[in-house]
Length: 222
Image 1 (cartoon, rainbow, N blue to C red):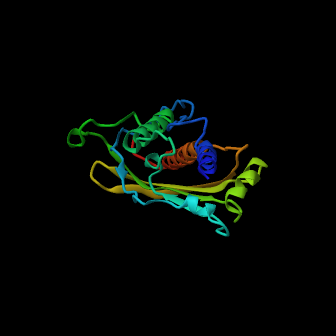
Image 2: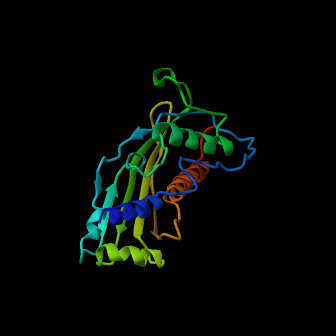
Image 3: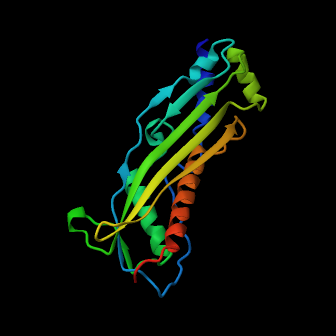
């Protein structure tokens, strides 16, 4: 019995294997633009996420139980080996993408908010980073491990991330506000670990680039 638990542990550990163990953002290529709109201050990100964490995946080892589920609202803290510092990583990624698109004369993150000066102020709110993982042994307990080794999926993953952006002028007038959400899902097996962390990075990159594309179309004062 002890050996079976060791095998289960090692197989579950492989689900954390990934090509990327940290947040990586690839900004767009630099675009030259002669029509730029003042100075943008990117304020430090606000983290409004829930803190739920529940891991019932090992319940799937009980005979006739179809699956065990893991819920996490802050995936950088749930033991899946993902180095993520939201207030630093996302704030800098947004600033980099805006700078690459040459929308403003200057884009910067202030060291002290009280001393920040600019024509526009961008607020970022991290609303959600949820993962839901459902592991199955096909209701046959430890025998299900042999099904994993034959190539059947071990678990199903759902990922959901959401960011809210608010752009105001120096007088506090709201110019743009929108919440963006991306959802990803996939199966994971012993022979095909697709990379949960890569999908998280892809979701954030997609949201940030979509937001910057939206504000490029705003008619801001130059």
